[in-house]
Image 1 (cartoon, rainbow, N blue to C red):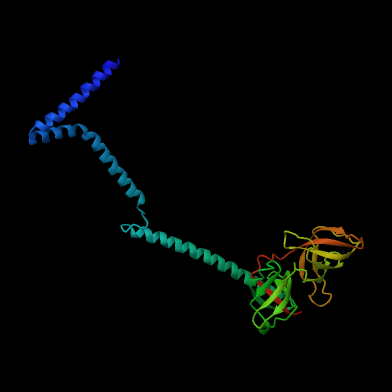
Image 2 (cartoon, rainbow, N blue to C red; image 1 turned 135 degrees about the horizontal axis):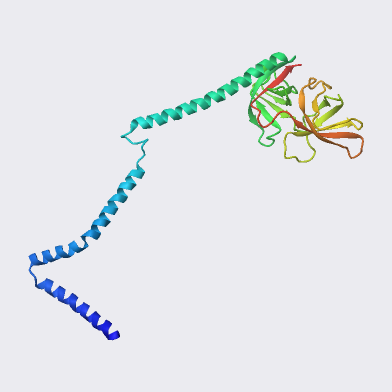
Length: 276
């Protein structure tokens, strides 16, 4: 078997050498015809490769062509741009309608309440006390004074003015320990005091109602309003709703956890009560 492969290898080598020798002996014209004949044997394979390459290039050009931005199709690009402009306009109109509706309700509410108020926009927040202080675009030149109550556009308690400048002011929110005021449970009329949680609470809208008499019935769902005692806040401003209650450690009074009505994270416009 080894001798057979060895002889075959010798034969192949000899054939190649003989072919080369003959090519050298042949004239130029005969060599050219022989090359053409040999090339014709491989032409189908080369042709298939060339056609495949052309097809790949055509597909790549078709895939990379954007029909919208194509210079041959300007009408389609203009139509898409027009649709995008219409969608943006619809979104802007919806936002304007919502703002207009909110302001109309605020005007109607302001006409119903017995107090005078100044509309103000929230233009900033305290970076160190994000949930506790807001900056308003109204100041002393619009009648804003220290310690005036601040309410939401729905008439719910937000906080009170803590600093006043000529054109801007700062309000401390109801969840801050510095914003204490007298309040009561609307159903039973029992007095108390709203303070910020004495322990960390992940819900910035939760405060505590303290110093309630220990013989009163405090239940979840009861409404809490300002009492008007002390003169800092007018009476009957909605504050929040009782979530739960417990007896104090010394057993002298009841404490209740209250969730504020006003969402302090979504304040865009507020009202400062200037005369009450």
